[in-house]
Structures are given as structure tokens and as C-alpha cells.
Image 1: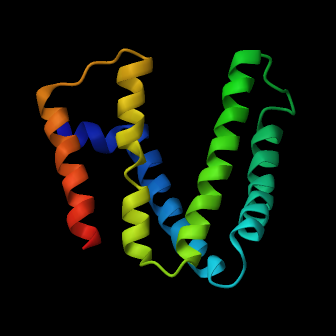
Image 2: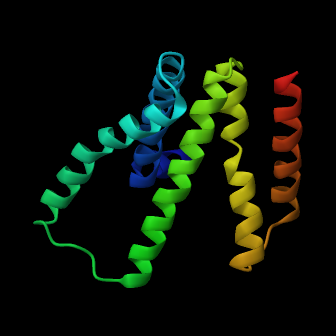
Length: 144
């Protein structure tokens, strides 16, 4: 039954779409970074988000959000994603292995978990801590 419930859940299908899009994004990032510098990649990458943003805005009837705090977090999200993208494109351009770089940077949820514990006061179970340890060990082994 739990598998059937998961297959019916919208979050599951959105997650799969995310995986496929980000997989293609990582491949395009590596290929593009081999051709142009990371700063140019980041700028042109940002241009690629404009059609998506315009479609989302049109879907809302061109009404903008009004929450100052929500807008602040969204802008901060964009700044951090932009800087992270620059670092990723630079890592790809440096000649490192695409598979190792992608796997290593995909461990960002570990940092998110630490921040969630420190900032949001979320609690981890013992099993979740073991999972974090295994994830950290996996990237060390994978990069060898």
C-alpha cells in the first residue's frame, strides 16, 4: 500500500520531474562549461530562466507577490543559487570528473540538514544521523 500511495502523490511526480531536469541541467552545465567561462555560463543560464519566469507570471495573471519577507528569501535564494552555479560551472571547467563533481555538489542537503537543526531547531533521529554519516562516507569513497 505505501508504494501505491507514493505513486499517487503529486510530490513524487514533481520530484521525478526535478530529477530529470536537474540531470539534464548538470550535463548541459558540464558541456557548456567546457566551451565558455563560468561567468558567461552563469549569465546565459540566467537568461534561460526568463521564459519559465514569464510563463509562471502569466499563469498568475501577472499579479506579483506582496510578502516582503517571502520576496527577501526568494531573492536570497537566487543570489545563493547564482553563486553556487558559478562555483559549479568553475568546478566543471577545471577538468574534474563530471560524475564526481555532480555527486559531491548533490550533497548540499547535508548542509541544509545542519542548518535546519541549528536555525529551525528541527530534530534528527538516530537513523537519520546514520544516513548522514553514510552519505558523507559515500562521497569520500566515490571521489577516490
